[in-house]
Image (cartoon, rainbow, N blue to C red; front, side):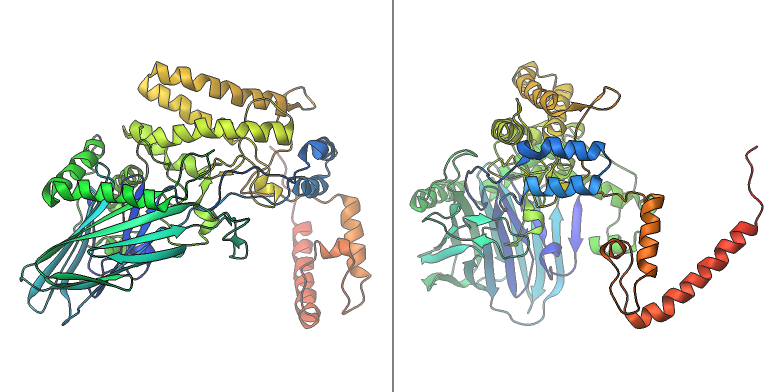
Length: 567
């Protein structure tokens, strides 16, 4: 199965259908009265290259290790929290939203929105007032543009207003048959709840970028006013969209020359326009299929129902192997669409994000999520699509030398559990549970080795070996011997888990005595507060005594039962 099919437009972003060429992303909503397309580009991030300060790891790590050896885990955690402080990555940001408002007539019927994941083309079709409307959209890797063609089967019936806006700071201008948006991202956006967005500092902003949209119409007229375009009574129209940013490298200050970015957009659009729609689409489909068609899987079933209906009615994948087939193909589609040679690697949301404050900043969470994006790369014969990840590892190995030296006084390089466009190597977040995890370098080196195993590319291996050796050098300096002489990482944390330390008999007796000695209505002492659930006095007077009685009866019943003996 290679088709996602819906019989209604998207009501919200998660229902829209994703398109991408590795660098540019688009989410197509497929509306009838109004079409919305959210645009992304993989280097539109907040921030600039920077170093982090405010750590006291080297001064405190030996004390943390001593506390761990003494079993004082809570104290070790508190000190680790303190020595790491609060630091984080920058955020992946959205370019803008393209809006098409159609001159609506009667009710739309026969609606269908398809995403052909075998060709990476989105199609919207419906009928209104006896006229059939069709929109085809794709994002081309060969021509580095998004292209949309709008057609009807009745001449002169295509009319719409075109506008663009953004969550970023921006200016939108209308030019004859084009729209252009000049935007800038925040200077700093490490926010988890919106209170830490800094748009400008010391005269510096974040990334500058330009979005350009060209309207090529057959019949009708195009007029421009107040940052919008209006197309009236056309037979057909093609929209070409280009995005360029000032990104110059993970360790380079980005350019603010939006005029040069707009000129680059014009060049890409003009070259695409010269091809014409048919050749443009054929080049896109041929390029995409060269990757997608490397693997086929047939689980012996098809299902032509709308995709959301299939999902709603499938409880066990074994009952509908057509769905398993579709999910497998869709996973390959997303990898190809979000990661191509020369682009940035796929982030937490691939290349698709519609929020200023995205979940986990839509960054690279490299303690597992980034790696999971690339698990299908080598096994599905998509080694080309792994190139952005492998390039990121090489770049992060450079920035990671700072973290190894500054934080641990160690050789080699290290990464913690988050990174970003600027190859941020430091701790992320304010809690040691996830922030203090300097082992991602080795985790990512596995992908270097796996790429060699699949490709047998010895030149690649020769370039990768120094990176792997430098990662090992960090571990040799960071690890310590445990009580039986084995090397171990310390402190060692699990980003997704915590644990309870069992009470000693002495601690339990002290807690129970503290609770018993507390007068009604008063807060228990600190030791008891840590383990006693706080309840209202009225609840304490009714529920807790009853619970105690029931537990007492249960204990008595267990004591009266015969003991179970081994053997």
